[in-house]
Length: 185
Image (cartoon, rainbow, N blue to C red; front, side, top):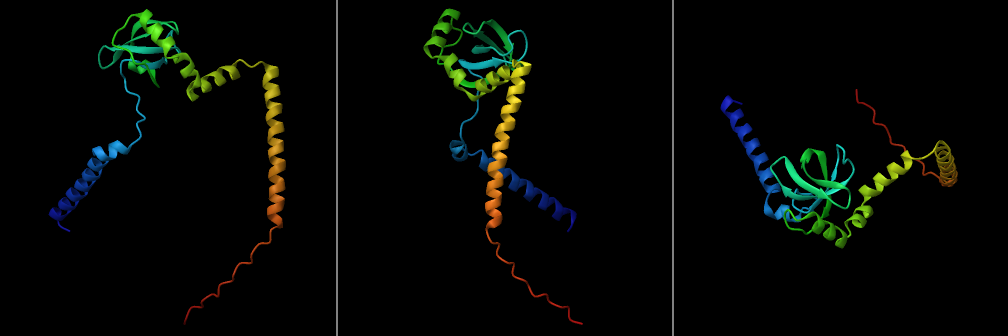
């Protein structure tokens, strides 16, 4: 293949990749894609990941620039402040509020929409609660947990052994032997 032929083949390959990429981004395909994105928007509930308010929920009140947002969390103890997007995790919860409302109005909206209860129902909040509960176990509680796990695993092993015994009793079909072809000389 000549240099020109290689260049044409490379161009065609890149063109095909471009067409596949644009097809994935077509409105028809984007419409069928499940919407799992949590956008930075006014009213989005977020959890602060670092700093003195770590682990507390807040609501995005206004977007300052591409790096920071004005947040407030009167129900969770977060004062109104500018927070970098890198220091917060967006949740799937969103409140229907206007931009930059007063703290008292936000508190009423938070209570009206039962945001604390909605948060506690999420798997994320349950995982955090379980992690805290496990971290607060005493030595004796950890010992009891270990013994309970051992008992559970013993029951599972006994049942699995019974099933394995039943399976071994089932007759196995004999394998069909294949005739080997001998090489011709």
